[in-house]
Length: 127
Image 1 (cartoon, rainbow, N blue to C red):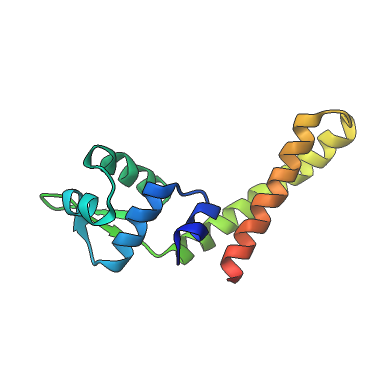
Image 2: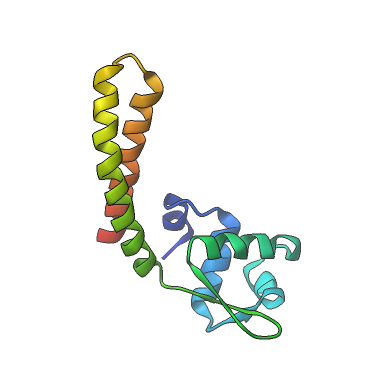
C-alpha cells in the first residue's frame, strides 16, 4: 500500500504517513509516532483524530495512550456497503431531480460525483 492509493481514498499526506507507519508497528505512542512518521508533534493529535473518524486507527486505553492501525480493506468493505446503499438511494433521488430540473448544473455535478466515488471504492477493493 502506498501514499498515492491512500490519497485516492481521501487521506492527506500526514494522514497517509501516520497510517502507513502504524501498519508497520504493533502500536505506538503519539510522540514516537510523530517522530517515526515525520509528522510535526503539533499536528499528530489532529491527524490521529481524523484517522479515528475514518475508523483506520484504534486508540488503546493505556497511559500514555497508544494507537494501532486498523486494516484498510475491512474499513473499505463496510464503507463500500454504506456508500452503495446511499448511492442507490441518492441516485434514485438524483435521477428524479435531474428529470425535474434539467438545467440544474449543481445537481448534474453531484450525480457525476456519486458515480465517481462509487467507482473509485470499487476500484480500490478489486485491487
